[in-house]
Length: 513
Image 1: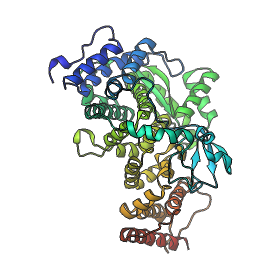
Image 2: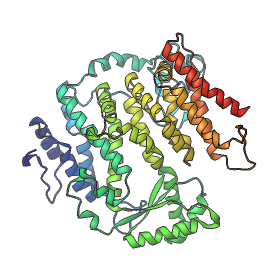
Image 3: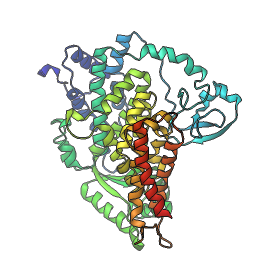
Image 4: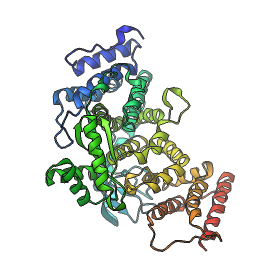
């Protein structure tokens, strides 16, 4: 790439329109590279989002003008502008509504194929199901509305709104080849940037990442670090509040706010200072919370600029989730990118990396990755099938991580099984082609074998901690989902793999007898 493609860094930040214009010009000259994005973010993200000395998550104040410019670049940049230009759509173009997060659910006893089928309240009001028997409740997230899923409903799968939009979406799902290529570049870099920033806390690991170039080499010499306190289920609110009040010498109100943030987000930055001050603070927190033989709270020390990139990475994920509502074409590109290894390396693809690192992330980031997968891969059957096959391939590792984790099931990637295993055609495909019954039952068996006595029968001690054992029961729910729908026809592969899994089930029953 020639030198003219580099972004000029000036003392004052360039406006979003200037940056977008430069990137579009590079696109037209076939000179665009993710390096342009990398250099821009590497230079400006720490200047905008880095915490300062004696700062904490309760009083963060970022430069709103600079943040607005950076966010405008990401939200109205190259992909979006070029798509509108090539397709002839304006700012009022139709969007697919993913219907994620907190919503009222209507469980359909008459019309749904099983009890997991739900509608959001907006679709329910516009559907014929409002005249049928139903039960209303509230969802805490982790899935999406089943409106439009013909396998979820015995009749009337569409509400009035989505029935009308179906033909319009079919006409808009194709993207021009040049737009597809540019979208791949941006999506691929954005997702790997977010993954690397959110799974890395150590300064040395960031320095070894070549995606940042040389612009950050001297930034980490600044002695500004953050003490981060992570959520766990072993300590009570009062224990953590009293510890923070004593160690930080802050008010009871501030300690309560810290703990509330930790419970909601999964972590909180409680102090920004020099490395030595943060190190002393970490030892004090661990000392006070490990009394009486209990496990100490998880405390990490991270450089302020790593925190800055993590804040921005989460904003990028929120932007990408919303952007995927612009049409099937973008969701297809998203699926292709997330199933591709980075730079054609032999390492696992990004989807696999997200799944196996899920239990190491904090609450808010876990939830955001789950929402991104739902928005990008659950709305079209082919994308959902690709997600289901990847989930099945990594099922054993996912469940073992969940069993040893202390977060609730709804915050684990394992909770997405209800979205995949309850689809009849997907369940039958996974049984016949991916041997999912054998994988699932073998995972259960591997957890139960250590609890068998010398005669090979399950045996439990009195008054033990049953926390890990109770978590294995979620795999039995997954087994129920897979076996709910009986196939109308049985081919040779389906018979063979079903019997393969059934043999393991017999071994499990022998343990229980």
